[in-house]
Each structure stands twice: as C-alpha cells, then as structure tokens.
Image 1: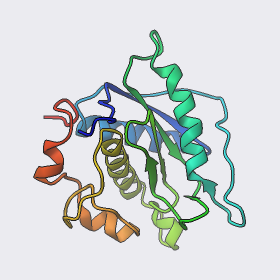
Image 2: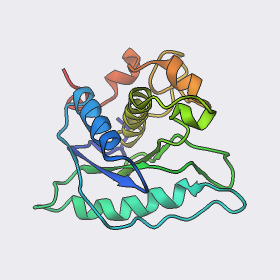
Image 3: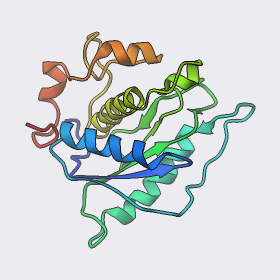
Length: 194
C-alpha cells in the first residue's frame, strides 16, 4: 500500500442516475463475495449533481467523483457509517473528461469514493442484446479495480491482472477477475475475501 492509500473498512453503494435496482443489488452481492468488507446498498432518493463534458453527451467523471467524495465524508461518521467507508457510485450514463473520450470507472489513491459507469459495460451500448448478468459481472470487476486504486494500487502491466488498464470492454473481459500475486500482496489483508 502506498502512504496516501486508504484501507477501506466498508463499502456503501448508491445509484447515480437511472440505475435499475436489480442491477445495483446484483453488483453489491457480487462485490461482497469478492472482498472481505461489509457491503450495503444505500436507499437514497437525493440526486447527485452531474456535469456534462463540453461538446459531448457524457458526464464529467472527475466532477462526479469529486461530488461523491464530498458525500462520502458523511458516511465516515457513525451511525451512518464508519471511518474508512468508501462510497461506490454506480452511474447510468457514459463518462469522460476533457482529455479522455471515456472512463469505465474513476477513483483516486486514498479517495473516499469510486464511480463506475455501466453504460459501456452493457452489450446494448454496442448494439447487442441486453445481458444483465454480463453487465453486472463487468461492473463488479470494475468496482474492484477502482477500489484497489483507493487502496493504493496503480495499473499493472501483466495481461491477466485485474489492475491492468483497460481501454475497451474487450480488455476488461480478457484481463479476468483476479489480481496478480504482486498486486494482491500490496492490498490490505482484509481487502480480499477468503
């Protein structure tokens, strides 16, 4: 773990935009099986402020992450949560920023939140039939990838490591769902289940 990394103690998931509740619950269930942390879905009806990338029909990933990090601070206070609670935002819309055309997810080392967009993780984005199971699997793995950034990991060069940078959805599918031995050894002991 790097010195500025956060050792997550719990995960609180929330929808950002029009996320189907079955998808949110499925992602929470899958992630809870992968990590050794308590996971729960928050039933919130407040709207998260989003901003668009100028000239594109995308949410600004950096501004959305900053908004979620501000909201995460409230989760670090009992009785709502505990110190080290990370807010996981599952976003309905595509995300990017002024420099990059898209992000599957966004986090920062030591941050209190992550955001993952399901837009490009769904086969429907590519004109294919809906596959909720595939979308939930991809979203869960992307959440785990972003949480590892919060915990201090940077991208890995090994092709089958979950921390490998993915520029397209095929790369997400090819890298698989496990950390390489080196990346796994740098995560907090309680981070991974089993």
